[in-house]
Length: 272
Image (tube, rainbow, N blue to C red):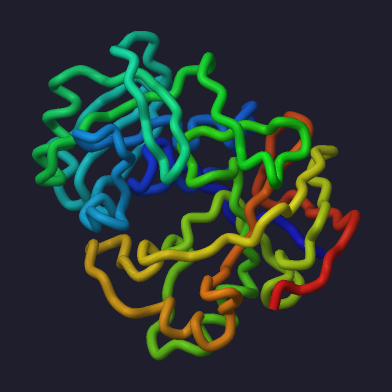
């Protein structure tokens, strides 16, 4: 049996994630997932790809507030509304995609700029903004928040075990920033899950997740290494891209909990 073992949300794109026992599905992924993003002076999103120390900023949800702090320095924390209603409208560029959001005030922006040693602004995506997923993969005009491109990322625990058995030093799942982790099945079982049902909600695997340099950043120290990309090149490469995990779309609403079963409705061939 396949079952959910971990659930994660990342309220601010590329900052530390939050492990939850249960999570509600919103119209654009998990509730509170990547509704905030940091942008530079050119309105382009900022991520660990360029600023590895973003890994050191942790987030915690307390009621209707989001607390942000640097690991090891929790006394110097920042408190934000989880769903701010006001802010200047700004454009946001994510790769080739243009979106918009509400910029937070100068005090918030200065806090992040000082912590990361760059000029940046924090932007929130209100419900009125509807950022569509790639139409090549969309089923019913699905939307996402400030994720790279899809509302959910699914990875099997067996896939990480397979990778770690090839490494000199094991890596934790947080290197891959999934939303849903499941146990059971074979390594890279997620490659074959074309459609699954969890709590009467239908989930579809629509695109394998190509991995980048963020996976080489230790999420506890912010230091970069060569793994896992060096090892993934040996057995998870296709068309000059390295794949680990599946991007997911879904139809329906409800709550997911650790222990929920993934009922496989339709399969597809392994990617590699």
